[in-house]
Image (cartoon, helix red, strand yellow):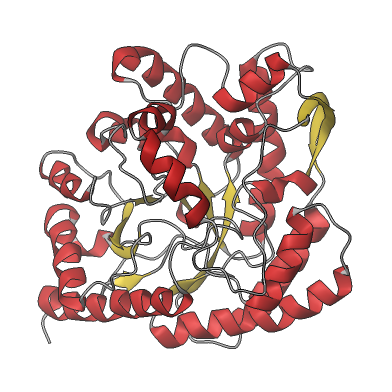
Length: 410
């Protein structure tokens, strides 16, 4: 990664709104329907260079492929990990699937959904379709599945061919633009376990988690061997917080960090960054874990960069923790200074002010301005309108230029 040596660099978290022609294939792929893979590849061959150009023209310095070839930041692994079978969704398996992890901890969002039940009944179906093109019919919210993926054999990574196609397409697009660098997102081992918690092969959850870490190391190495930066997405790290079980949660978090570091074996720290968030959909977020409680544990993860939310109304004040929390040497903070769940476009002066708040506390060279999270974590989760997405990224770039003038002088 690059420090902001003489100006504030800009990036984002990864997922961008997919164009209509990509969405058609995403729907087929996500629904498990047959589709023309060659035709899909041809569409991506056009769409990826275009989204890379748009990022460069907007003024984003560290760009990606928008995750255009993936159904979501997590479910893309469905075709890249062997060792699973679809089994009947018994009550025991379904309970674990909904809970996401073995043990006493429960997802914090479950408590919020109880607290704001009326809101979630109204909002969740709307959010899935409000910004979707009319020609793409979004499937209804899934009911309880009749089958679930269950680990029944040793886990192996089998996605290298698909990954290399993605990497080659992205690198070719990068060669045509003038940017500071490219990054590729990848799910963390804890996130993979979170999405597929049913394990009937490994003796313990820890063994299962570490097997996923070993398998995903193959993906991570392929990304960095291609000369690209790796972003590990690990939003689930915040999701099991319960103030009544804080000790249990922190022990669980330590184990997740150990697994992520295991998955990073052989990956240079300066080629990797970590993204965590609070599952930042447009919702109250009253049950989120405070950043101060977990930040020193997050620092144990062996990446150079740490991408954290900073524009989310529930967490914007946490910039103040950097007055007494020290950013480790040679590390880089990628705070969100642009939100992704509101169609209000931030004023560049506001963006510059947010950047300065971080720069004044951790050092301007250690800040890369970013977004809170992705604009479309999955093909059905378009958080804002496409025009607004690009206006927000433009405000990010413009705000970074203003902050550069203020921090470095003319």
